[in-house]
Length: 146
Figure 1 (cartoon, rainbow, N blue to C red):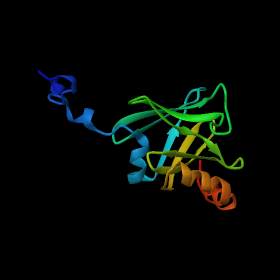
Figure 2 (figure 1 turned 180 degrees about the horizontal axis):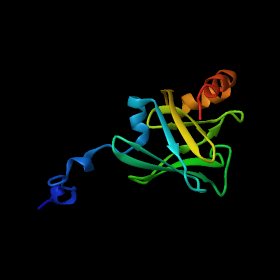
Figure 3 (figure 1 turned 90 degrees about the vertical axis):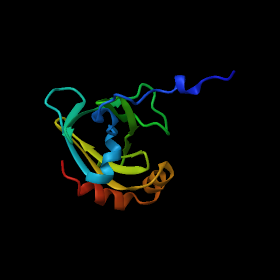
């Protein structure tokens, strides 16, 4: 007389192969190291196709930024809605993000957004980079072309 846990778990039978593909853009950075997204409208949405999947990213503003949560953040709108990361500004040169064990560089203007793999690491590693290696970060980010 126990609970049948199998009834509560989702079934993967009958799902097509494309629904099982990892749709997290950041996890793909380990493979490709660099993405360019383009904005053909006057919005903050940037679009690119990776492996036949269209990704739409939004650069958004927080209503109430704080020291731990900067004003800008990156959000994936499609193929699946996913909060990516706060955008940590590096002395006006660009931004750093951290998601799923990856630290990446982000640069954008009104027509293009570029994400480039920097290193594997967590939020603590990101904080150390921002605190101790500002000159090195500025040089590395300066090499990323829009």
